[in-house]
Amino acid sequence: MAMRIVVVQSGRLRDAQIIALRDDYVKRFKRFGSLVVQEREPRDGTALWPDSSRWKVLVDERGDQHGSEAFARLIAQWTMRHGEVAFAVGGAFGHDPATSAGADAHLSLGAMTLPHQLAHVVLIEQVYRAASILAGTAYHHR
Image 1 (cartoon, rainbow, N blue to C red):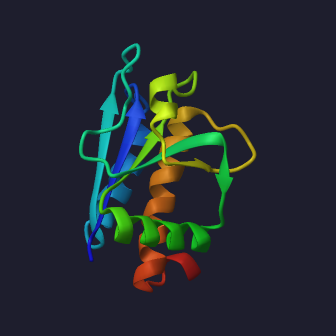
Image 2 (tube, helix red, strand yellow):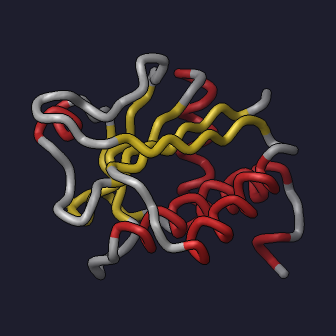
């Protein structure tokens, strides 16, 4: 089953190096399914979630932390049960209440606070890593 993942970024990324790294992982992901990145400008009272999302994961410092292999298992469960999985990465000031309220799960990338652009690329790398773990490729164990 091909994975369908959407990563919604609050606001626009501006750092060309971050964008290039992100785009490289998105391109690599194609052999596992669909990984779409949407940059959306926040609007008062409107959640960032795409209309098609069936399972919504808020990336937040107060969320649950998982190792890469446990995260891979979670993504496998979520995609099997719900089809498309959407992740929301907040902007410089975090998430708006509408986006937070609509989340089905909360994920932390670690105990340290990351700048939103770095959190964005770390999430995308971990999604790619999860797909490679599930596919049994050597990426995770090289």
